[in-house]
Image 1 (cartoon, rainbow, N blue to C red):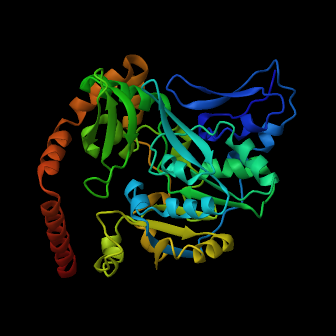
Image 2 (cartoon, rainbow, N blue to C red):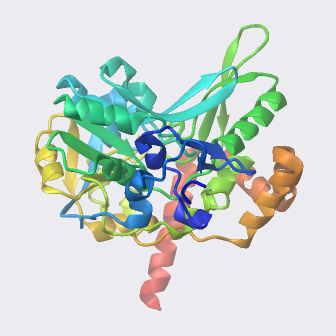
Length: 414
């Protein structure tokens, strides 16, 4: 009959640790009717050894660490900073490991035949670092990277493994012991949509513009640090062109930002809290203009180019940060300052009624239906953001500061 891996979808994060550990290869990750990947057991191959149940950190729990230090951070290498979503903290750490003959694992977004492939990959060459840079707002498949990481660790190689908190927990559950040559980084995660949903979105965007998708950046910084995207297309003529996509003008980006397309378990994530699963946690230092206004007066910390936050969760990470001063500008901060605009350091994303609507429309009418619903439902918001994006950035910043100062004065008087 085989083993029941989870009672309901809230109990599975899709990390694939069970598939990696199965000695008979009886478990495969397969998408449900909405595209979210879940482990499926082939009962004809399963011998009920129970290894899959034992390895599940998501259900069994795992040791967490309370942050011992916090920083605002910016990569000193301009090229790495430009390709990063925020301040380039991850690329600074990864470059350090790659220089010291290590293997670095992280999420890559590759394209094949016009379709995206989001998966974790391992690299040992700095020339491949670009593949791991930048945010990927779609669930990446772990594939066999837990197995490969263990092989590297057992061979004595240093390994830096990055991913979402649940992916890091999955790695620890799979390894079942501590390794002195392993360092881990988790990202402050809101939740993850699935690859099929993202692929269908890109297909519509490609058809709309008459090209085939060849690349996508969720966080393009050409116009500054923020949530705006870039779509790369190839046309029949062979010409390639990149299209800038403001964050709130497309369905996928908006539904992601509003938290309406995540996995079921993301809305009850046990890792969306102060205590962290990894050696180090990284993210965007949103709200830094309020928390550290003195910092923005320094040329090294340019808000337009992006600023990262780092939570140092273990002594291992603290010792690592001491070795990174030649690669990053580090400015000491606090957990409270970082958490103010990073809600997932306190609680999971909220599940709205819209999610059910979106998923039902997607199941019945595909992404075309979602797109039509979005254009109708968000019509006023789309118009507002088009007007907003037409205003020069410097003027937008000035207006934002004026509104903020006005509010501060009213709060003070009140």
